[in-house]
Length: 179
Image (cartoon, rainbow, N blue to C red; front, top):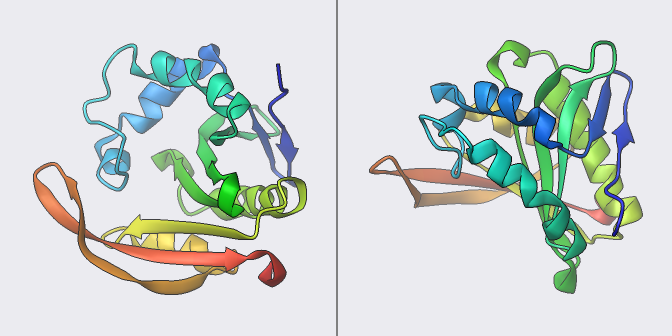
C-alpha cells in the first residue's frame, strides 16, 4: 500500500482524509454556497456520501488517479476544506481542485494550500503542467489561481450544466518552469 503524502505550510497541515473527517466534510461541503460553485458537490449533501467518497481515496491514489488532501489548521487541527490533484501522469499534468468552508473564506488558506500542492506536483510528481478552472460566478477562486502564479487561458462559454443551468468556466494553468 502506497502512503499518501502529508504537506505542511506555515499555518496548515494538508493530510489524507480519513473516515473520521466525514461529518465535517458533509457539514462544510453541504453549504449551498459551496455546492453552487463546484461541479460535483451536491446540495443537499446526502448522508453517507462523504464516507463513500473518502473510502475511494486510497484506491484512487494507488492507481495514480488522484491525490486528495484535507486542509487543516495546524493550531487546532480544524478541517477547513479539501484540495486535490486529479492526475494524468501519461501527459505529466494534473487538474487542481479545491473548496474551503465558508467560515474560512478570505483568510488566505486556499492560496497557502494551493502553493503547497503545486510544489508537491512539480517537485515530487515531476508534473509539467497543472491546470484549474472555476465557474465564472466564483471570481474568488480565480483570484487564488492568479495569486499562485497561474496564467489565464480562456473562458469556455456554457461549458457545464449545474442545477439545470449552463455556466461559463474560466481556465488557468501553470507550467513547471514557471513555478
